[in-house]
Image (cartoon, rainbow over all chains, first blue to last red; front, side, top):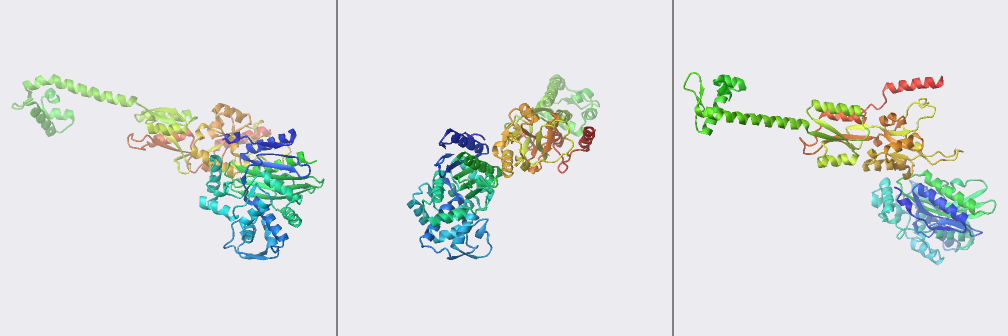
Length: 311
Length: 315
């Protein structure tokens, strides 16, 4: 059982103290059977800490952030009308537990509000409705053009569901067990868990993207401002934000959860002016749909990183 | 032989407990076999012929040897030990009852304490005649409640709260307590529970209950596992008698699918495959601590003890 815990992460840290925190986080995660990558960077000083930051991981819903940025940029360029009404029919839309994906009757929503649903409640149907307007290949090409080399967009959100259901016949616990077993064996029965075929990214690339969004160094300034606003509206707080909830702190994030994957990226801004961008991409070795201790451990990592990196 | 001794077909038939015509036919068969009369039937009282007298000592010898052969076979059957594979930590008194019952039924039983996998392989290779084999509790003939042994309360007040079942979710560390969170105690698995079907089931339930996989570990030697349990640094998965015997607090797992299930199986090919005498199955079940199918509450005796302990503690 402890064989998997014997992996050795590659640590990143600008000082001994930062390396210590990175090592503590990796050890705490390993104790819970969690592996993955973590990176936190102070957006103003550039100081950072983390481990395995270049490892490519399937992004699940975290990919909705670069998708939203591409759509927002098209809107800013005048190539897409934010008020354009789009009708989403549950009979044909993507599967998901929230937002339009959970609707029972057709609904017509404007493009700008599809973006809100995509980022605030991680609505798969809204995200795929956006991908009907801006094809997957166009999103990927725009990311290439922006130099976001560590991030790949390769498929629609519903493809995650289709591959899992295809491999496990709509049996969630079986899919979960396949994912966990494959992780141990180092192969991929479910294609969307293979970084080579999935929407994938590394912690370094994602934190790099967040830095450019927060510093207005990518897309147009109205696009980045709107992305920052929408990420601040996320309703899920159980993960990176779990130990960072205070009136003096502002968290803007996007979670990603699929089978044994539990991710979140985001930026914490304090009243004091400190800004720290973070990415936590994790894979668990247990077949649990809900794992509060893992979410909390990710939250603890976020807090420890923020407190050591802030000025 | 009997005919020669008695000098009468009817008396000889009586002594042998067979009908006279049958005896006569057998003697005729013998006479045809040896090619001459063995008895002279011409007088009122039959006499043994010369040939008969000549063969008599040899016949006696053959019969004696056959008799000895039968005796040897019987005593060999009696002394052959039939090995029975049982789990570790069975109740010795109950095993003794099984051995005694075996003697009464003409079988010498030998109890072998073996890990679960070896009990199965022992049946297959013929080194065991019978064995208690682990199966899923819902299909098994017998169910043994599995529970968590933990350190007894230091002031001996464990009777204050009535015994209740343990749910795996309750083992998650509590949040929000100010005390520094010590590492949550691991769940130790005895050799008896290191069976893949059970381990898979337990790990799945533990994952669903929000416990990390690393919380569940093999116990290693039972004595050190018990020591850690009694010291409060571990929780030991075991049956109630084992915990009580060593003074540990014990509560059963609420999920009966996680209890131990046993079937008593016989080695295939021995006296009809899968044939286990009912008396043996029942005694082995009691040795392993099985509970009746529906009843799984403790007897009133335990409750009475707790009640008096409560009175003493409150003074």
